[in-house]
Length: 290
Image (cartoon, rainbow, N blue to C red):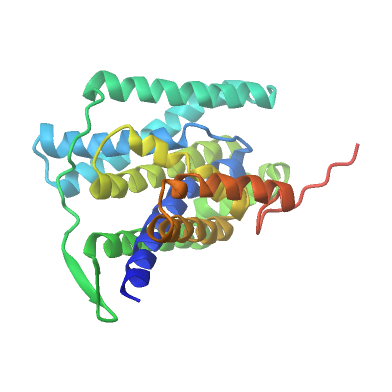
């Protein structure tokens, strides 16, 4: 029972981080229709920004996080304005290749400034253990779940209560109708990329606190794809549920089977979902008449 509870907390923590990473992917796709293959590298940039702020520039960790989030928002807006906007109306393959190129650019930038050597993130998330049902579990994992949950709650309020959030939902549902009532679609696109970058940076900061700062964070970001395929490319609730499912599945596989199979399981699930339910658990089924 002790092992099961520990694996469950670990799986929920990893799943919450995965869902937070995938949320940005879903926001971009839902608002703009773009599949962003650079999402994992936004995580990497965020982790290095916070590390640099704390270690190289001597900032308090809270200030380093704020700076990283501001830089993330600017990075997202700049990407939309100067990289994606000129490609509006172009073939979807062209847009996909540009996001892949963006991933390599972000990788090159991080290697240019900080190299490839793994670095330890200053542990501003408390370590140690807490008792859960009489079983010791990692405190930093539990806090990761809480932080990810708070981020989801803040984004939910943004989409439901704020003017810009409602405008984003309108554009996601029908761009032409949104334009007729005065919604700036270009501004919504820029906001979508900014929010996606912010959510990815938050996830990257949490991952770095758990595992350290290295290029492995971008590989962790690759798990975004099984999450969004399972939950649905355009479904935020599906993304959250799928992240938790995959996180738990990986944790249980690592704990009870091992052998590195936990790294393969998400992609096996991805193939299975594509064969059985290609639109995911909650994705919108799109039927085009020709």
